[in-house]
Image: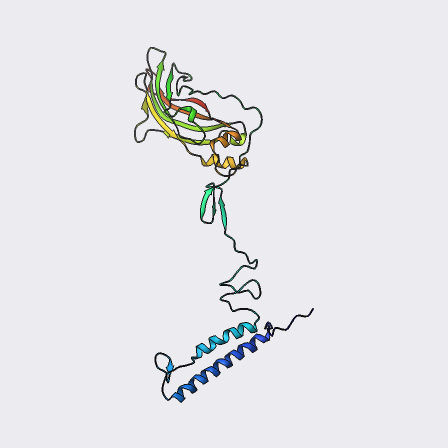
Length: 312
């Protein structure tokens, strides 16, 4: 069924030029009419825009009245911008899809999601280790330990007392933890050698059943003398004593977590599920030794290792 002709026809192509020419002609006509009215009144327009007590038809007002005519000729309402759909009025440019959307971003490094200006923790995808999990011995089960460490080729050893102020039941791969120590000489001969501790190093690492999460360096600390001091003297009565703290998720662990298929920032429970069973503390004692009656110094290195299981 044929539709009724409404008298409105879209103007396209050369037709737009015809409309613009008609509008310009109408504006000029309105301007001439205003000038003619002013001359007939016999005086200039007053500051309030009135001529002979009657409002003057200003040219810009005449042009404004012609805008709806131009819009009608183009087949749509006047708008302040352009639209992706023909004949739709809008307050500005719009997407061709006609739908507005808010941007949402995910920062996997920080483990957050930003949407609508609100930042929230990202969802965590945790891999799961399979197979039987081994039983891990807790070397600091009583939160303290005394170790007797032999020194290869020497007639003395090191007696080291370890303890922690953070119960090992609270230790994890990311939680705060501390380690205190005091190292003494344990002499078996009649005369003790002169012993200097040149350097002491401690590293915190993971123990895991999956290779990608195993032996990951969590933190480390090195203590060495500065200046002209060759080292710290260690005797049977005067120990070398120190304390270190560690905690927080390490960048290396976060990289391994992602390599294992995890997303977001893992919790301690998620790390345990993925295969992390313990935190390992590796210690290294570098000693300079001068035996009785000798003038030369020689070097010895003593290693120790403590294992603390983490809760699931």
